Length: 259
Image (cartoon, rainbow, N blue to C red):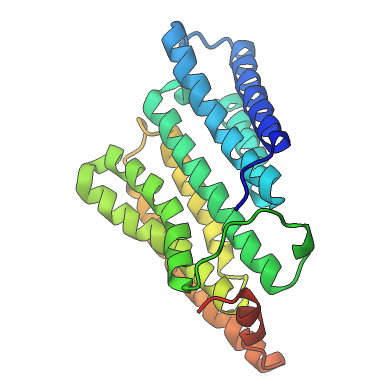
């Protein structure tokens, strides 16, 4: 994999700076006064910068759309949360901001892996992709690594709620919720298992990160049902395909070149 170009780095840095400025401007408009020391301004700005700069760098360098698209969704979500009555300035809590940073980077990089697998398997504009890292031959390595990008920051969130035991449970559920739909995509281009992940996992993780001090953390257990729903969706899509045209995804898996 080639090093990022000056253009990619410049776009990434500028995007991060714009995100920091936009958040600070938003909070100024809302008359938040909890950032009252230069040190905390620096810490907050660093987290906000990383949230956007890393995904944008990935998109600019590889031409994958999902990482940068996730940034847009993130800022929209922050704006909605902070403009709502429930916002309550929770983003200023260091634990909240650090957790959101980890969750965001993990989710958007996972989305980038999913996008790459789908585009290569279905031959959707792969000629436009650039500078992609070498994909391991083992499908298990790809799935475990990508799912870990979701599971590890989720486990940190679980630790804040209930210590090491809760962290391990959340790690298992979150990793499974990501690994199952990715495995379905890798094996045959099955897309419906991504539905439960998209609808449940970001909502649960961001909801618990934003309102860490106000809720019990029991909602993190919804990550388990998300994994189960992905399994059911996978089986249903496989059954529908077999009934209609008999395609089991073999060609898709062959184009992705993993086993």
